[in-house]
Image (cartoon, rainbow, N blue to C red; front, top):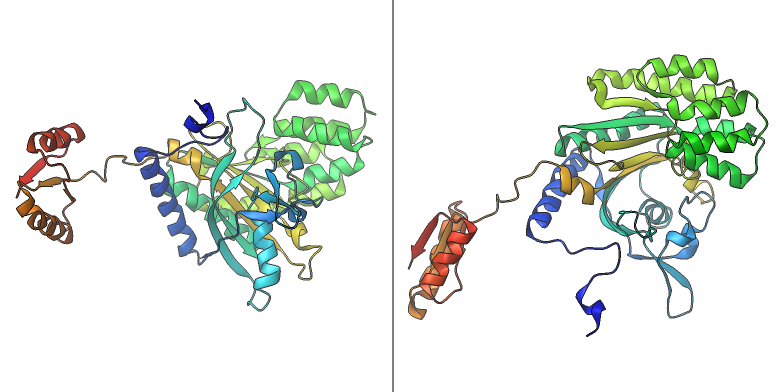
Length: 386
């Protein structure tokens, strides 16, 4: 027997009844938020040319992409990200649109994650892109949409915000190789204090290494700004902190309390981001279920340089943890046809009940005893015989 006939590829899974109900519930709730904010849906191909993701600002390693070739021998990848394909689409298909444009997507992405990490290779994502707009107002719009999206599916969530230029500015002043800087960024992102200190101990000790050493601990509320301004001396980093402070103060009007916090150690995929960055979490799941920020750089090398910001939500994990009623779609009535002569009457009666708002289901079983047992096992309260 070929064992592969009985399993799905590593990092993927089948979604069954309750799981599908949860995914659909989460998607509908979040899409309603997007639509209310006037974002419009787009769909990009599942296959894209590798060239689209090979740039320095992509932030996706080539090892994490699933690759193949087309009929002409060109390298194509299974979509590892939705933002870059949407940027391609905007610069080719939407050149004549009035900007800014508000777009959203609901489609999976595929990442070849290392084995045993527990992270899926197929990730169902919902996300928005606000393209053609820069500045504080655009950043506020994207963040408030993220907050509403999380609150639509979870009562217990938190959103952490930071700024990519804080680490970038310090990194530019750091006397270290590119590989060392990449290691440092990973240690900060993972809040691995021990490994970060060991790495920094090998470098020249100055104000910059001291500031970078402190980044993972600079998280919390307003007090973070005071701490950061005492530690960080880089002018560019301080400018980013000042911008973040004004943004954070504006967001206080949302009365989110401890659901909104600061994290100056947010450095994920900094090649990709050029301004604010933020991550969202829900209770009971350790990894971020939402990530986003400003990524103006992706348009820098196109014929249409402009600002862009947005975020992506990992539906897989929210569906596992968010509130939903997995049994709400069970029928209230099971309709059984006593004989073949009454089948059409039973079908018509079922349709009539459905039109009246009753959750009714026609039974295709031919034995009444089996049909009653079926209803009992599922918990269907009413059983009608026609």
